[in-house]
Length: 419
Image 1 (cartoon, rainbow, N blue to C red):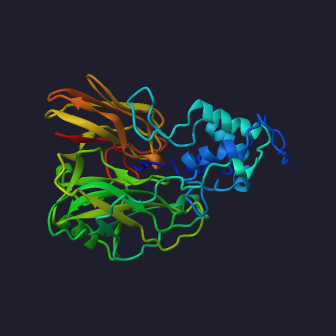
Image 2: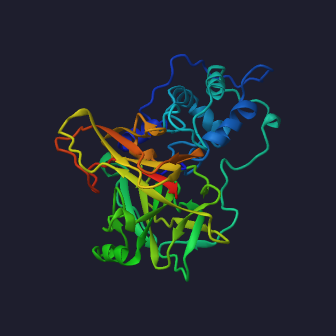
Image 3: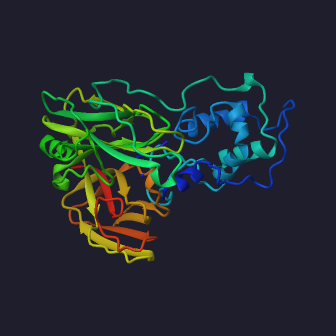
């Protein structure tokens, strides 16, 4: 899932994935393992195709989700939870309001598929004839069509935390990955493969001048460093780029045709990994990146251009505190995608131009952030205002201002644009 991140605490994350906090639906009837007949909804014929497409990217053995849906027996055991969460539309996770922007790879289930899943459970969660199952296949494509570079950190990393302590389930770690380029390259596709699937919650890739990254790394005795909202390497937005990111179930990301991210010789990639220990004790992880470079320079170099609000101050215990800013687009651009970003106290974020609704996330969840690519690029004219709106529910006793730390907040929307 996710084309993410890329990104509310671990307890909510557990519940959203069908954790123990969820309750069975009272309307469900006892299971019946008897033979199926025409007109009945069965796992093999009706439900398995939906599960492969929309669920099994996360709900697999040793996956990031708290239970597997890879087999009939596993899915039947959690049937009530499946019906509950597809009905309330918390699963599959997808944050943008469908009335604002039209995005590719929308994970929301059509009403007809929701009805199929609910009817399957209400009808006894029948298995059906295995011969009626569609041909086997992976839930999502697993690898790039062409790999130009396979990159890994210099050493494995074991997350810090305690799966038995709800306050120590999450670890955000940054590490340097050097692509060792002999010349500049245009990146046209990115694939992230987590080393330990059950603990890698999401990954964000930043491109950073090597000196900035190594100076930050040198400030800690171990390889890599703890990070949260970004790589924390200093510098300006202009000096930092992004290659996007990954969330569970996400296939390789192919940037829109004719576009790509320029990776300069001498820059490095800072890989931020959010580890979550909900499903077991920490294990050594080696997450891998694969890049596809353009055979010839791309027609349109892209970058992530930020709309941002750094001047807000959310009072302690404030609910529904809203802050808006407007900025003018500096020159004619085409927006191909967008990455909204807040921290854990965020509630609602939207970005709108004078002519288009670019994104609207009415129920922000830090753990499910990602880049969303439009069905068609949106043209923004030089001087056109874009309005960024953020709303917070501050559950803390502190005033929240813009910053990188866990206890800080952000209000950003990075547009994937070409000029």
